[in-house]
Image (tube, rainbow over the protein chains, first blue to last red):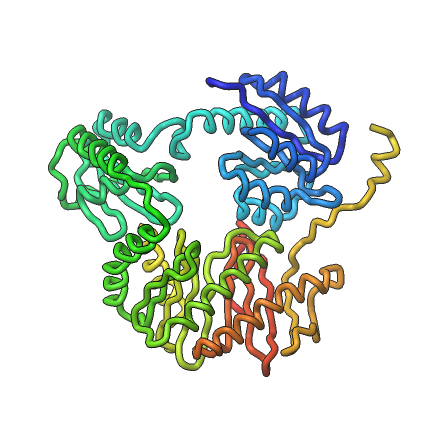
Length: 361
Length: 104
């Protein structure tokens, strides 16, 4: 590890803080710098004053509870790793903590073995933070993974997800034979997937019946992809607010046209959540009130989600006599989509999932 | 740390468990009935009821009136049914091991 990791330990029990500071600072192989705070307010001011690698937080504390601290820390310091260490065993708090973005949820260890496991997991988290990479194979990039599979002449199906979109890469006897990403296939799909910086992957059983659409060697593919990523990076310009609006509107126009071709969609409205006046729509005669409804509803329920500490707002589905409506945040866009009233709930969810994937990619 | 502090913790925590249950709110935002535990603060119910009523009204202003709204969070599902200008609201906490599939 290049620099010493810094851990902030938050608990209202001073004995616990003393014990765990001693353990973490002297018994972890990376010998991190461990600081302590005995209240949420103190922890937040310490996070404000200097950069930490990891925050370990208790949930049950007076005045400001652990979930409140996690909510603020996750929003203000997206690079900070978060671990909950608590005596609370209720499943609901575990779910809420993960929904708010914590990396690990630990019940306070009660035996030497549990303490050992906890220490190992903290060390692993610090290492991962130092090295980056895809979850599942620590410190390996997606390029490394594909090279490993191809060099070992494997036949596998890699399923890769970047959180919003999902892609697949078929490897047969050490050669990449096909790839699929939202709206793309073959080599363009491969390049799109390799452009994702983080995510998770699964290695699935190979599909020998898959038709080959990629005939370039895996070394050639990786080289082409690296060039494409470099070129895209060098052409990046810093736009002004207005040109950003215009450019994003231009880039969204073909997407709206594509969505309009999907069955069961009555209208689509997309507004930029940062530039409130920027709106694109299809199938609406009077988009202004729909845009206002979308923005107000998402703002209200986002704020409610933060107050209730229940994680990210995923989507809102409304049913009315004339139509069904789905409202969802998607990256920097707020989407509102209208469906016919007779559309089944399952079909609506599937269609909406497809729209969000297309939009995100 | 003092021995007594083990038994007398000051300012007990306000960590609130989200219960499963329902409540009704009238068109003025007043909580009328509730099947939720009394320990769950009424202010929280109002905090939930207000945006629900605002969403029904906003939808009406946008000329797409709704009779039911489902709000999905990672750890909570809220189902609200329109009730003569007010609403009946169901809270369904989601956990990693169990996610109810059927709505009431």
